Amino acid sequence: MLSHIITWIVGIILSFLSVVHLYWMAGGKKGTIAALPSRGAKLLFRPTIVGTGLVAIALAVSGWYVFELGGVVNRSLFPGSLFPYGGWVLSLVFIIRAVGDFRWVGFFKKHKGTVFAKWDSVLYSPLCLFLGFSLVFITLTQKY
Image (tube, rainbow, N blue to C red; front, side, top):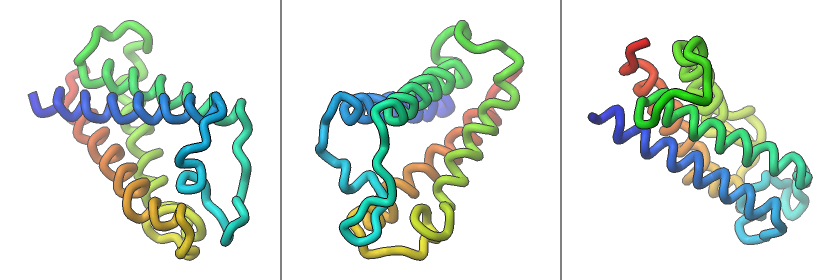
C-alpha cells in the first residue's frame, strides 16, 4: 500500500515536470531564470526547443515507467526484463543529480548566490534526492 502511494507521488511529479518542460518548449518563459544555472546574469547555456522536448519526453516516459514499476498500472509499455534494473538506474540518476557536479548544481555546488542556486538548494536537489530514494524504495518492494 505505501509502495503504491509513493509510486503515485513519484509518477505524478515526473509527469508534472514533463508538462512544465512542454510549456517551456512551447515558448513559455515563467520560471526559466530559476531553472537555468547562471554566472551572475549570464546563463551557462540556452536550452534548445529540441533539447527541452527531449527532456519532456524523458520525464514523461520515466513517469510512466514508475507507474508500471510500482504496479499501479498494467505492465504494457516496457519489457519485463527492464524492471529489475531500470528502477536502480533511474534512482541513481536522481541521486547523482542531487549530489551534483560540485560546481553549479547539487547539494555540494561551489557557485551560490544566483536565483538558480537558491532554488536548487531549496527545491531541485531535495526533490531529486526524494525521487531517488523513493525509487529505491519502490524497486525494493517489487516482486519480479
